[in-house]
Image 1 (cartoon, rainbow, N blue to C red):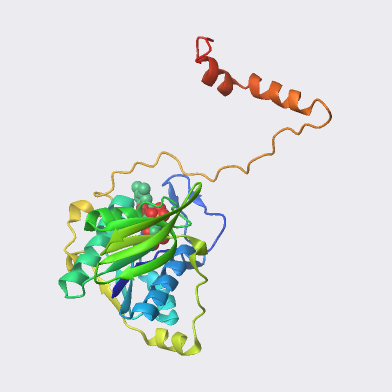
Image 2 (image 1 turned 120 degrees about the vertical axis):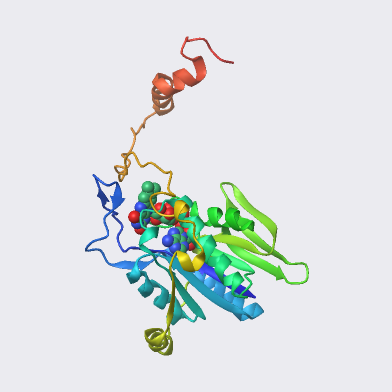
Length: 278
Ligand SMILES: Cc1cc2nc3c(=O)[nH]c(=O)nc-3n(C[C@H](O)[C@H](O)[C@H](O)COP(=O)(O)OP(=O)(O)OC[C@H]3O[C@@H](n4cnc5c(N)ncnc54)[C@H](O)[C@@H]3O)c2cc1C
């Protein structure tokens, strides 16, 4: 089985700073780490390799320093790491990013490295859109299973994967056709620590680098040109403040008075004309 893991290098900070003029994330002076969800994706790939055999390839699209993130996964035990790097990729939104990553996977397949499974994190902790994985799956025509908390079974004869995905109220068991793309939740596993031997091997590891031409990327679909997203404003929302507290024997009445006095509630029930909708 050939598993591809997509990882993103992100700033190691709880407080992502935004450039107010360019509406982009400020990365200068901030340490970088592998997106935490992508560590879980890597761990899942290694566990599946241990169970079913095969190999794990990790890909990232990013600047030259993203090679460090790839080497970190190498130290965990993956087989191959590939950096998609080109000045033309800068300013890519999720549409363009998913295009570049899909082109990278197509190049692997064109080289005779057929891909059975692609694993992504649920979301990146900086961009936070959770769009990239599903975008890659759509572009490759792969089945996708998002918010995965467990992989139950892979059947190579039937070419299927059975996984559990988290829903707002419960768990859904899904069977998808291989090749498939999964996006994983944080609690799916505990990423392993690198061994000393792994760290030394990662130091010497070869990071394959592919530019836009090497993955046959159409220059109209990458970078600024290929990114239709228009960012009006990015900001960190203020922390939520607690609401009023009620106690005493008339606490319920007081709470209901507040609810019924709420403008959104009035509009929802009575509409703008003040007539009850039910
Ligand atoms: C107009 C615009 C301009 C932008 N310009 C830039 C820019 O110049 N530089 C820049 O760094 N960002 C830029 N971004 C942000 C960039 O689009 C996103 O970082 C990227 O598309 C991934 O989206 P996300 O962070 O929401 O990841 P999500 O969709 O939340 O990530 C989900 C998963 O997808 C995978 N994934 C995501 N990104 C990558 C990647 N790069 N490589 C491999 N796997 C990945 C990981 O498995 C990750 O867990 C720009 C965004 C917009 C809208």
